[in-house]
Length: 560
Image (tube, rainbow, N blue to C red; front, side, top):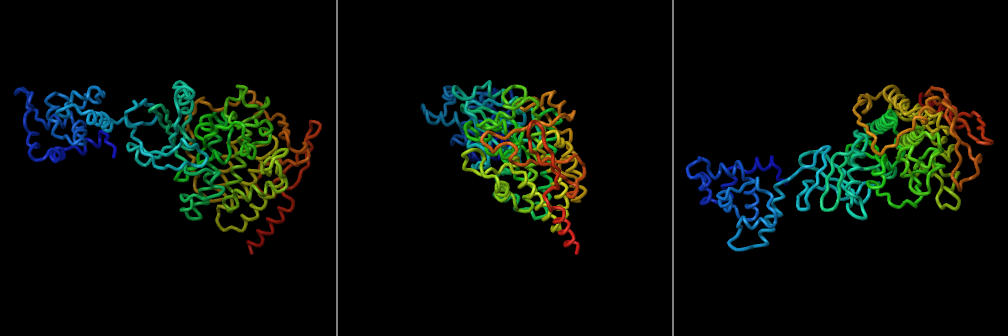
C-alpha cells in the first residue's frame, strides 16, 4: 500500500491514533498543548490531525508512537519533513545516540512523502525518495529490450505503463540528451501509437513511461496466439482482426496527413495491448534503439528486408534500418533523390494486412514465409537463409492471395466477405512502382467501406476519431516538399534495382496493380515488371492464372 495523502487522511483517525498509543497515553490526546500557555484551545489531537499525521505514522512504524507528544511540544510537524540525515538527531528518538534508529527514520520518512508521476510531467527524484510505481510483469514483451518492464501507479487505477530505463552520466546519455529525446517523443500522442505519458530520473537512471503497454506483437502473434486473444470467441476474434486492419491504416493515414512517414512498418513494430488494442511503435530512433533494444548495427536486418518496399530495400544499409525514421532531408537515410517514404509505408502496410488476413485462416507466420521462399532461396550471395521477402517473391505472394480468396468463399461468417476486396486493395498496395500505389487515406477509406459493407460490421474502432491526434516534429521523418509534389503530380515511377548479391535484374518477375478502382477479384490485373534499358516492359496478366475459374467454381459449389 502506498501512503499517499488521500490514504493518510482516510486511515489516520483519532481512533487509529488512540489504538497505536494505548489506553494510558491516549488520554493525552484531548489535553491542551503543553506550550500553549492557555493562549489556545488546541489539543494534541487537533495538532496531530491538522499537522502531524505523517510524522505520527513514521514514529508508529519505528515503535515510538508516544514520542509524538515530545515532537508536538517542540512545534515540529509534517512541514519539517524530510529531515536531512544529519538533522534527525534533533528529534531525540532515543535517550542516547542511536545511529541505526536515526537512519531508519530518515529512510522511512520518504514513504510518506510521495510524489506521483502524472501525465505529461517530468520529475527529478532525489536518490532517497520513493517512486510510487509497482512492477507488474517481470517478463519482457516481444521485441523489447531487457531494460523495459510494465508498471502501475495507484493514482491511475486500471492503467498499465511500459517503463523504459536509460543509463545517465559519462559514457551514457546526458541529462540534456534525455530531455531532448523526451521533448521529441512527447510531441506525438495517440492511442494507436506508443505514446509518452510521463518521465522521471532516479539514482543515475532516466525512466520514461509509455502507454499503452505491449502485451504481444504481430511478430509473436505469427507463431503463438496469446491468452488475451485466445479468450475471445471465434467471431469476436475475426472482427478484432478486421478492426486492426482499419486502425493501422487509419494511423498511417494520419502520419501522412501531417507530412510524416512511419518508415519502419513491420511485424515487430505492430503491437497489441492486453485489451487487444493495435498500435504502432518503432517510428523514432528512441523506439528502435532503446525500447527495441537494437544495439548491433552490423547485423543484417532481415525483417526490414522482408517487409520493405522494393525501392527502399535496395538502399537498406547492411546494418540496421534504424536511420529510416530520421528526417528525409538530413542526408542519413541512404535513399535516392525522389524516394517517397509514404509510398514505402503503403507497401509495408500491405504486407502487414496480408499477414493479418492469413491469420484469419490460421495460415500466418512460418507457412506463409515458407511459401514465399519456395522458389527464391537466397537472401544474398552466400546467405544460408531462404529469401522470404514480399518484393522478391511476387508470384508466390500472388498465389497465396488467390488461395486465401478461394478459401474465403467456403466460410459462413460474413467477415470473410471482405477478404476478397481487401486482397484486391493489397494488390494495389504492393505495386512495384510507388506512383501506382494508393494513398494511405484511400486505403483507409476503402477498408472502412468494405468492413461496413461487405462484412456487415459496425463502424470500425477509429472511424470517428479524426482530430484526436497530436503531432509535433519530434524525431519523425518529414516528407520533403519536392517528394510530395512528385507523388501528387503522378510523375514517372521510381526505378528500382535489386540488392547487391541478388540475382541479375530482370530475372525475376515483379507485380504491380492496375489503375482500376474495382474491388472485384475477377477484374484485378497485375503487371510483370522486367526493367531493361531504362524502360519497363509491361505484359498484362490475370491475377494468378486460373484464379477466376477456381473462385467461381467454389462459389457455385457453395451456392448449391
